[in-house]
Length: 416
Image 1 (tube, rainbow, N blue to C red):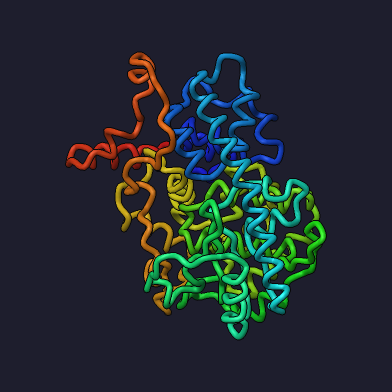
Image 2 (cartoon, rainbow, N blue to C red):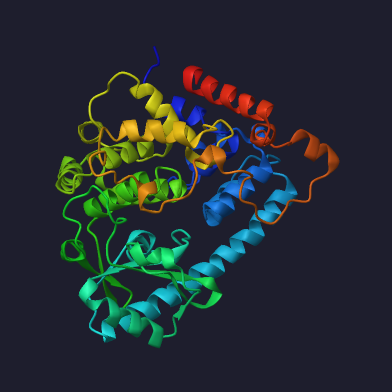
């Protein structure tokens, strides 16, 4: 019988590259466990690709600089330094873009709730260098949507190519700032047809608290509600696949000051139950406590996730193997989503409101094909031979490749 995953056994399911990436999300940037990381087994092209894809360049670069002498090849350091410099430049651009949007919305009299990474940055001493992000997310009341959009366009934001898929989405097609920075103007926090309760923009904006970002007054969710939204967004909207590193990073930042304070975790439980998001929030917190360094209250997590049942240990392994384009991920979208649905314990069954029914099209990690790439490393022949992609033969579109992928996946699930 499979045992429940501990922090140690859950991290052991990750590839060496992903273990380094996850460590960089720690509040100290992974420095405390730099000596225990599997540096000699890291597949460097994979780590560079994952770092770029997860937008973790600043944190990973700092961790690589703290690695034992000789552990990181020079060309990896040079490549990561270039990516790091771009990330620093982008953080300045994000700050300028967010400031312009704040000013435009305030001048237009629009009540705006800043979300996710932007909200975290506006409350952090590091501002937008706290972590990189793909876009800025802001929620407005639908009654003020047109006013907000006009104000942003007048402030210099621009529209992109029209995309009909956004006509039934919970936010507009992105608006664009210089350097390709995007802003998503939300009318709601979850796709249409979702199973969550009390989801009106008015309700969420009403939960906001005022904070000072420099000289600007901004509205953000209080920490417990921020945790609930981030958890449900990652575990439901993205099926626990996209944005995993950012979720681990933000969860640790948000909950780190709580320590063992039961009051804050009680607020998380209350908020998740209020909007009928117990399972996605519970599973997200579980993964954050096993892969990351978040000190999640076990009682709160178990109350949300529900009691262990037959095959819960399999569900746990499937959640871990979905992350970071693991070579051991399921080769089948249907298989991966079966276990995801099972972990939701019936949430969304009656309404048929699964994320992919509302236009979510990203495949399961195992069918993602080649890893997202960044600037190629200049490898010598011996390095290429030694560092051959551990998942390349498994991603091959052949019958033998599919069989090999199933064997690796089931081996990790049943014996990992």
